[in-house]
Length: 167
Image 1 (cartoon, rainbow, N blue to C red):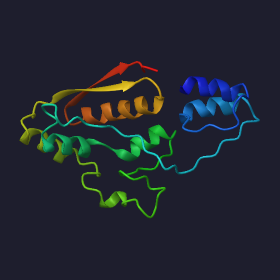
Image 2 (image 1 turned 120 degrees about the vertical axis):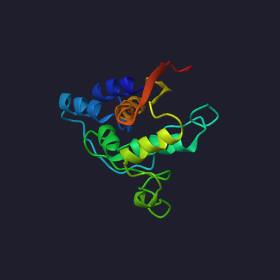
Image 3 (image 1 turned 180 degrees about the horizontal axis):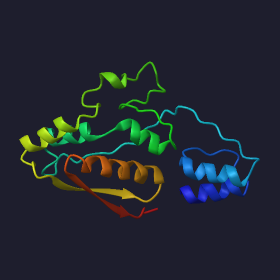
Image 4 (image 1 turned 60 degrees about the horizontal axis):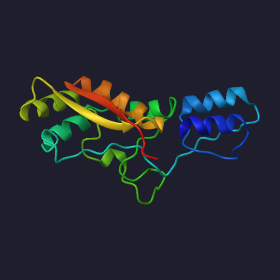
């Protein structure tokens, strides 16, 4: 739980933690000058998973349109407190195995092409989708809220449905 880790850091009960949301980390640093923070490229990614068995998402044009609507650098920056690294399926920190982001299809933002693909798929007037996510860790919420705003520019209304963890 992100909140519990922040409390433990502030109380000096942790020697090390990672994956803190940048805004939470900054608050912890400001309240305790003994805390040291390091930023480094990690070998993890925050990603979404799409259920292609669902009507609408089973159409590759819809998925391509969603991809083309996204500004991945803006999402990475939102996750990283203004600094972020765009990854493909394999994080760029794993340099020998990662595919350069420039070589990945549909990773560049192209709103006009995204709108055309949606129209070709029968959704010229837009469509409504729902993303299901846990409230914690907060990085997924940050990412999906950024995606929600970006997808809206091509006519996709992304609703966020929060669920609680079973732990």
